Image (cartoon, rainbow, N blue to C red; front, side, top):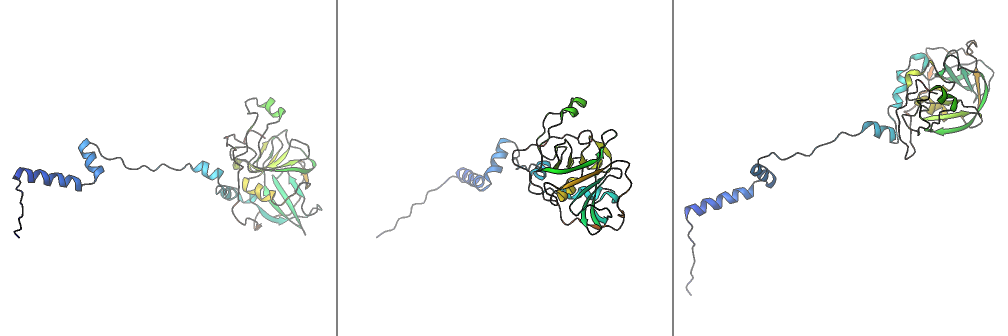
Length: 260
């Protein structure tokens, strides 16, 4: 049986065209198309994360752990000697020296730096904690709105709220022990009568007290009531504050320096 082989002859022009077409197929499609259309292919873009939102609404708030470190030494949370007769578990506010003491007993107390009422808004007396709230909403009292009509009538709980991370309400009064979104006010006479701590400190105190805890607020002219030293006190900072926001709350940047 005779075997035939058919050979198709191509012209030099056809061979050249075929080779050029093959080269185009081998090139990456996107680059070839971009060159053909006359532009450079767009590279994928990475957009920065919203750091403020992720820190405020995550399960942790790393910025809170830095607040105490920025305070002067005398205002940092520490264990000091304490010689008053209040029983363990009592809160004592030393208005004149801008300190809050949580009594441990056996002659010791945890001392926190606080912000207190400005001139004309300091007060003294005995109250008890009637309610505790995490990331509380803020409803400015009618008297405060009368003094500062530009204030909002409601601010949802969050990092921009003047009440900060926690609030402990004092009896049926309008006063609270609470956090702040402005740590620079700690150690100053700035509020409308409330006692404010850094968010890190108020979270620490919040975990130690219960509803019904006695709160003694001393007058501004009261003498120094504790023997605590500003140096060498035992630190009670154990770990960064863990803060969780309820879902749906929004943060408004309302400065605490002029309200509450």
